[in-house]
Length: 214
Image (cartoon, rainbow, N blue to C red):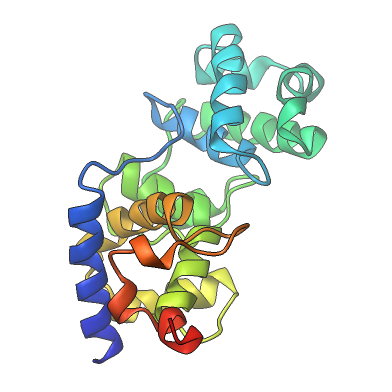
């Protein structure tokens, strides 16, 4: 089975297993997802959702958050970890959105990457979830599962994993596949415990299971 054939098989099986997948960060506007994904670095989505509920209640739009000082933002987001750097990035990002884009989130990948605190993972998430454009979000689940399944070969660099997946995953499938990697990575192909291969819908095509002789 080629890697492209494997990718298509993985896509179809995970679709059947997790038909209603979605981003687990709470947001109803693009700028809120931009803030949430910055806070999610080295923090769980569940904790981020608690913190952003308080943050967005105090600062309900881009203008109000842009007007807040980094210190005021830090007081709220500190429980997410790395509070000072995250607050600084959020403050600078919101000011640029307000001053340069009229409070709107830009729709080009390059403009997103130019925003403070926004890397390829965050930009891809915005492109896919907000704007419905082809995207591959190489978070820890995507990287771990791609290597275990055999879609990539011992590659841990997010940008290189993204590049490799673009070659074998249909563009229209990338965004949802990555959300399903998160679902599967949390429920079955776990990181902190031995993966639950016996209950995995990918068991018979997974390189990890074959290598383990299971």
